[in-house]
Length: 257
Image (cartoon, rainbow, N blue to C red):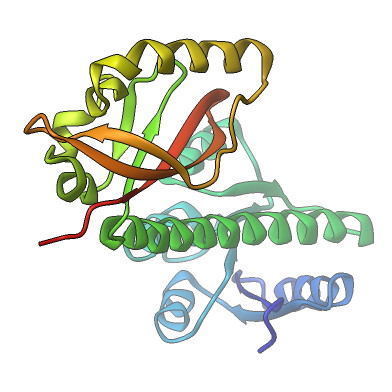
């Protein structure tokens, strides 16, 4: 198997048509490897023992419909791309398929152009599923890093409200993350610096101009117990749902005892 290979399970009681579709798909896109089964039962048995990137299924089949097959697949594989490929489409079938969690729906036709459409639909849903899995893996990995890193990490919005704080903020500032989220960032700085911080953030949001370097800035923070602590902060900016966010990675300047 290559990294780009797309393993397709095609379930259709018309074996001749199924083999024809498989042949055209593999000719249309050399990433495809298509396995054919004649019934939902046989298809599910194959699925349980073999890696599959996408299921293509007919709807009107003896023993079980394509939607019943889809429902069974969804019980075990909620995120597996599933294309209902039916000869007799209707609004009712399409509605039931959507309710059951179908990924895509296409009515059967013939000719190279039609099989190219089917191939494109399959490759799209597989690529999307792989992208979602990759994003989920990245999120899990980043979460693990953020949760275990010894530096404090704080994310604020354009109003300087804390939107995220990792567990290390408690070691540095004495506050648990839940005590900081939805509150002002200025809680972590001495009173004399708070007005200047708010003014600098407002100026940056209006003009985009930075008044200092954003890497390893030496600042003074305030611990929960009231004492001032030296900290080094590196800033960066990103967008979340179209809104600006600012992340600060904070290193405690004091030596742990």
